[in-house]
Length: 195
Image (cartoon, rainbow, N blue to C red):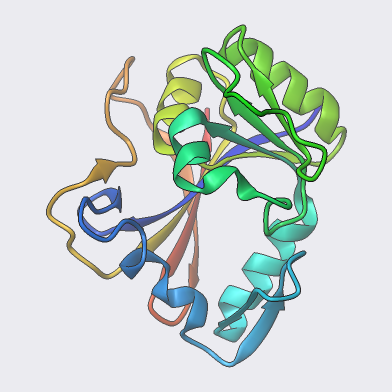
């Protein structure tokens, strides 16, 4: 069965986006090195440190499906033409937006709840990984016991406000296993396993 992970770039004070500039400051590490990491989009190549490149390439090879919430879908403009990672995307939503689904984007909507979305994502991913890429959905997966691994790209930055990555959690305190630590340039990659 596919493993379900969550991955976000996060500020030291726990935010994954800032109200005034979104994620720009949190994603600067994607251009902080000289080792290219190619995506499915030929116009998008990351240039990171050697250690970050190894981690990114390993993660990109493992991803089978990306799972997002409706807010992230809206902020990303629906990834018209396809997600930069070139993987199928499942969006958890209460309704399907007008004009969707589209033939030019391998994106589907699940409107009958989180558990159904995770089950469909696992079925699509096969032996590969389902990666959750939005904060609220990550929190819901943790609360429902559906998340196996938490990957945090910790950026040495204090945002002070915005969207918190790990907010609204139930059944706490909760111990995690790890972390596995990889030092990058402008980022520290942390991996935790949920018991």
